[in-house]
Length: 292
Image 1 (cartoon, rainbow, N blue to C red):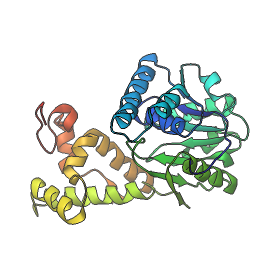
Image 2 (image 1 turned 180 degrees about the vertical axis):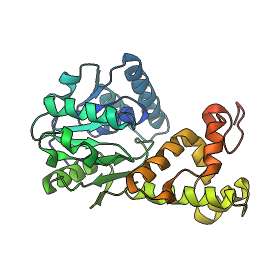
Image 3 (image 1 turned 90 degrees about the vertical axis):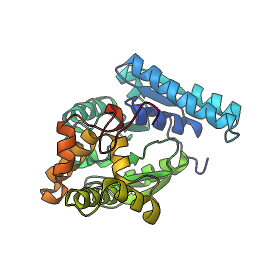
Image 4 (image 1 turned 135 degrees about the vertical axis):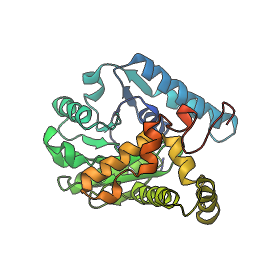
């Protein structure tokens, strides 16, 4: 562990791909973790996926077998919200990117959390200021944004809201380091924070260059991979994320900033309207077969 932080139990709310991996990343570094979801099925799936990923590291010699099993044992899964939150020193919300769903959740967290618990949202697009009125003592609330897949990606964005105290920011930075991550401090909230904001700009530029006839989709992806070093081109990436998700992300940017430059472009809207959502539907900007 790079830095010891005595947080006591850590609570992760939401057992999707991100929540499950955040929980197991935290457990790898010696913390007891409560992973909470309303769905036993989601909890089982999150545990199974993280178990597979960690045991694959063992097979490749990158993780000690005993350390792997000890980490898995430190993650307690539960559907009991109050029990999960009670006594936790760090609480990380990682549910769907839905404002109202998150508002309801933060009100519940506020009711049951310890007064000095750090409360973080893993949201990539919704700043914590949208939820400050839901939380008693909002100075303990901020964005703690992990990147997908959380068991592999080293960066964590710690985003301070105008309501967030310096003590909370320091505690969140220390926690991120203590679980093996590289945190960066984002001093002010802005749409997309830092890394994703730059990524979203790149996606928008690619969409418009193709839409306006300057280059083909395939040539654009080829150029970005070979000139900029992206592991995949912007259209490949958009298909992987899901074009409906990309549309929602860009629409949220237009909503937050009141700036039309963020609005989803026509080339994206057309594919979504046609049900061509990317890899998950078999076709998006590119076509996919079962073996792709």
